Length: 154
Image (cartoon, rainbow, N blue to C red; front, side):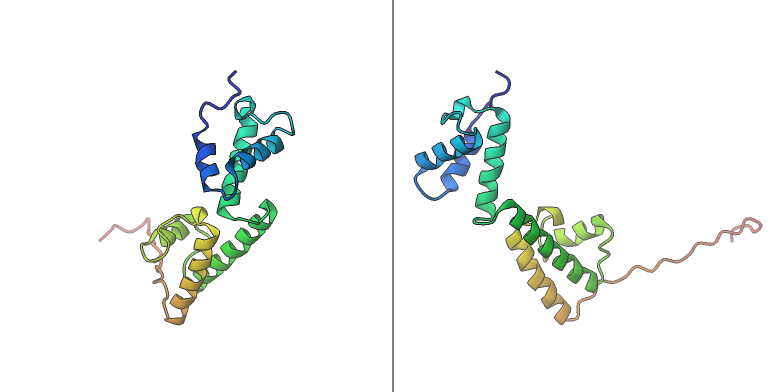
């Protein structure tokens, strides 16, 4: 019986956030994810339960979008944000720099990978405004260090 979920709190918390008749939604979801095998939450396998909860979270996060549409929109918005960051002088090839920029109190207060679609949309407009106002990130200049082996340090 290890293949059963230990707690159903996640499911019920997500179900509370959904609109409509909760009993009907519950029954429909369970039937869908068990491929018609049962309507009982207790008879679900752990992998079925996890897949159902992920789908419910996705529906709450981006209602009306399929997973593919969500991924496409997320990719488009992330690209737009990274492009605008690049124009402001942020080194977008280094994820630590991108995350540090996003974690700033005035930007997003979150790591880049954790931004939702709504937050990405807000960030696009925020970065565009920063660009219009002339913001540019100060660039670090790298000074080459030349060590001469035949000379003592001064």
